[in-house]
Length: 448
Image (cartoon, rainbow, N blue to C red; front, side):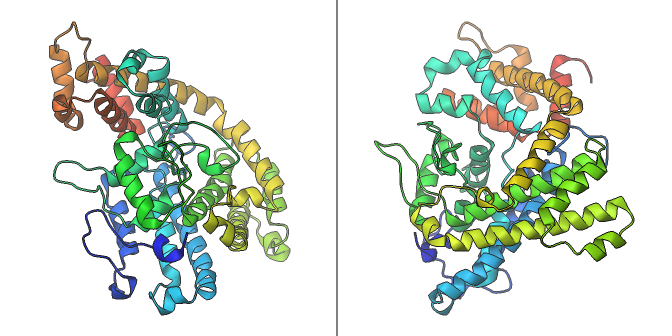
């Protein structure tokens, strides 16, 4: 892979090539990507989606929106630091094409801002609820009407693939979704493959999948324009990652490792003194003990350690990226940047505590159980409205349901069972935690 292609400014529908040296410096194409994401309704819905605690009653806990904003800030720093060194190593990028250090930061920041845009309500349990509806629930009745890849898209419903769908989907009057630059789309795709074959390997990009069958053509167009290296065989679609996807992933890893841990402390789920000790272990090489000891308030100490920990991991992630740049460009680097961290043991300790004390806390589990049942009921309601059993006619209730959900009503003219089901899943995933509860109560007739 080469940086000239990887930094493509092309957007869906372009007929002429966009050149960096012809860009208006007051509003660059990569910065436009950020603006389009932040003004989208899909991004706004993240303000009421779970990051740590579903439907939290406190005003401190991070939502998917605040988490995404923080990941984008960290991603911008990662991109700029890496971009500065890349331009020094490949001077033609600046001299011939006019790329700047900030371009790398803008691409990573925009992709990082969107990294959770396709995630369903109630966190990762929401993904499982949608998938298991089709593998073990009433949705299993559609299996024989779908191809193996279409069925896999549903039973392993993936927030990353749904995010790519949101960013690129053609709708009546809207071609190319948000029409982001292909460089930003490439950096967004952490798993550049389709759902089958499912063969987890040592390559981190094989862990999940990055697009549904409905978006495979636009995905291949993006991959071809960027010059990604194809790895799929026998007609299967799979590629090596865009190099900047490693930085987007690192930004997310840094934030959820440190900031989810901080949320756990502020919620009282993790003992403060115990937690501070673990953070100190992570930053022991960079801590200013005089400054730290002068802080008498626990919240101030925590804030200082959090900032230092994030900065420490940013610096090291960039060093790892640059050290392995050639391997990354050739497609022979298969780990996350933090997987090669010298602080791996400390990171693992923090994540282990977060899993035990936060993600598996009684409050989280009880709300995830409720969310699971609510999402399953909504999927039942929507599938019965759009795809009733052949012996049935559309009931009046089904007609009322479709009137209440214009996003699905237009699908009555769609002949493909797969497309109807996928749109139902995507619509359900678009709901906020609070609106999921309200919709469940409405369709069950419990609350007006």
